[in-house]
View 1 (cartoon, rainbow, N blue to C red):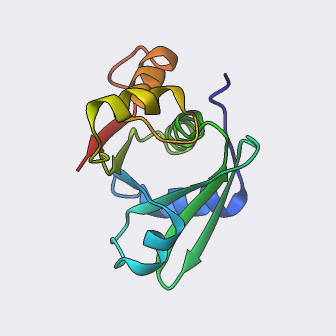
View 2: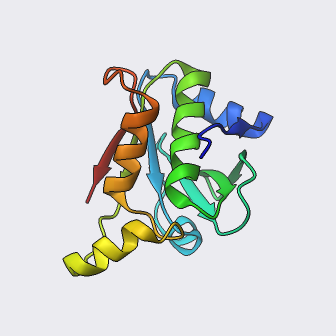
Length: 143
């Protein structure tokens, strides 16, 4: 399981622009929410499309929204790869905000085994394993 992501030039430019305050917020959303919700200041939106893990992170600006896109069968690995690539490129430890699904605890356990569903505990465990230094590890917030 590799957590390496390659940033395209457009993704690098968006990261540079968003991290200029030494704070880098990334919001994980699905494609529909990324189009319908208001602009979040300098926060970047991250959209993970289902598909083969390419490791490429594309960047685009739509209607004032800064969006990073990647694909992956394993959502947690794709998200971790983007967070670590963003940190390595900007030197700023990113903070990810994402929705905590309102599911029954048994459904959450089942989600741990389904790589197409983001499991926040699985993402945090993956980041902890890849980056043992807490001061360099991306932070995951939920709402």
